[in-house]
Length: 66
Image (cartoon, rainbow, N blue to C red; front, side, top):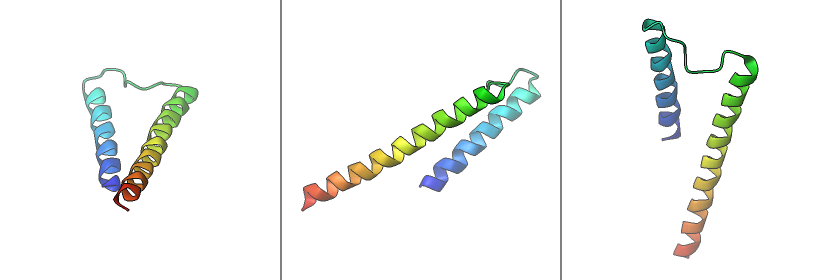
């Protein structure tokens, strides 16, 4: 499931970039390195919190079953 989400995200970002290029409109991303790093760090934070909450939820569910 996790690999599926990653591939879906990559393909979606590729499609958005391709559509912006074909329509000759600016890409909706920051043109400077600091902005790109900000987007990367926000995405990484979202991913890490998602993994943490998923693990915590599974742990709580397994404790309730016992």
